[in-house]
Length: 369
Image 1 (cartoon, helix red, strand yellow):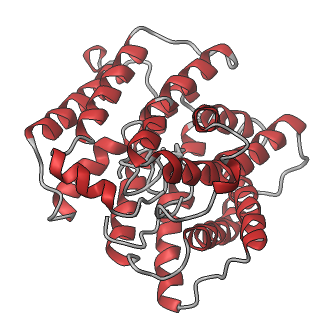
Image 2: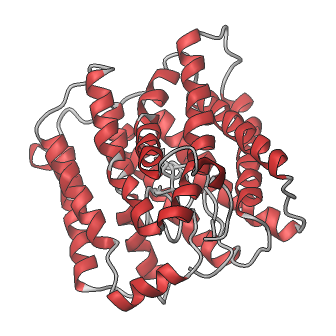
């Protein structure tokens, strides 16, 4: 999943992503994202300041444009990997495996950098709530949704995170004032959603439950972002430590829930197992590190553009790899959704300059996600 990246990263996703945890008052989307994510995608990850060295080691060896493309592909293919994973495992098992793999990647990164875990019970408590809204809940909802809807539709639903984020921020964040352009973007975006869903046909042929789950997952990212923004500013821990701790708590939550609602798998089919491992290690682990590096090197404005490639790649992957059917209203509606999401992210010039001067937060969510 994905939102404005200077606030949060959402992994697509499906998010978007591990979610963001601000170290200073500050996006909204992919939710990433955020945002945990640029809207998970998201997603979904933690906060990152311009001085944050996470991902800096990648810069000398790999141009930022290549890392940007890699991040877009990783988060865009997350929905395909979820679909493949659910062919062999229950949705909760897919989410648990995803969180385990992502946590393992960040644990290695923390060990290499000798990061310290958060020390206060207050921080851990808030991280547990953030892990629920930015990881455990949206990841599980997307996995359940893809039992009955195509991965292409799930990827497009994930792109609505910035729209939900703006709508919620107008209510929950008094400093986030609406503008005519942003309100127009909100209306345009939801018009795009109705186009994707074929509202003029009475939503015929649409699985309502699966679609509702995917939309609820995309809504969960901005809810988590707003909570994080209100509770974890100035926690004192590093971005990497907060994100790794958050993913660990999300893993614990799924480890408790999964045995209650699923039976142990009879076997470990190769392709679904590889899909789940890749989903976590790449989409929820490596992608977070790549995103932090991009925010540090090219700034949040450029880095957040990854949000707009995720549904395009998710749709292309679903059609070409999985053979999913695509009617004309799906890509047309998706473009309208993205146009509306882009408008909701615009800010007055002065406000935009101020945002760039503040520490950036990174998803996952979407991851975006």
